[in-house]
Image (cartoon, rainbow, N blue to C red; front, side):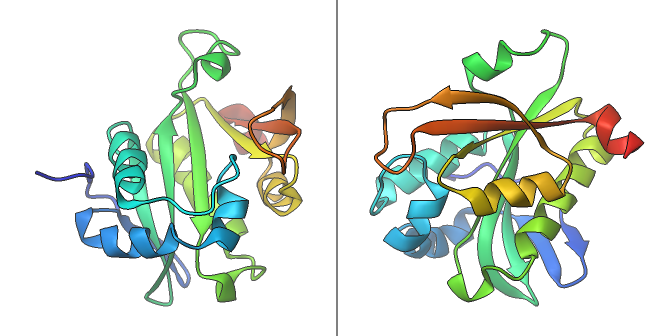
Length: 189
C-alpha cells in the first residue's frame, strides 16, 4: 500500500523541475527530516528530527489534498513543496465559503542551495500553477516570525501580510505571520 498519493503533474522553469512526490522519494525524505538545522527553518515547532512514522504521517496525510512535489535543481533533488487545499479551520474562517483557498509549503533541504534565489523561483512556479491551472482564488501561507528569509521570499512573489497570530508552541517564534496573494492581485500586478 502506498504512503503518498501521487499525481501526474510535472512543472519546469529553467533549472528547476517539480516532479510528483511518491513513495520512491521516501529515503530522501527520511534523510532530510533528520537534519535539525533544516528543520529549524521549515518546522514551526522546535523539532530536532522527524522519525519515519512522522514522515509518513506528514506526507501521507498532506498528499491526500495536495499536489506534493520533489524539487530538483539541475536534475539533483534538493527539497519538496506542495500546493494544498487549505486545511486549517481558523484560516478557512478568514474567507467566504465559496473562495478556493490554497496553501503553499516548501523546504529546500540541501543547504548548499540556500540563498541562491531558488525559493523565490519555486514559489513563482507554484503561484502560476495555482492561479493558472488550478484556478485558486487565494494563496495563504503561514511563516514563523523568526523566518524573515521566508517572509521576504513570499513578499517577492506578491504576498502581503494579512494577520499575525501569537504562538506558544515554539521557543523560536512568538508569532505566526499570515501572508496572502489573491488571484486578482496576481494578475493585476
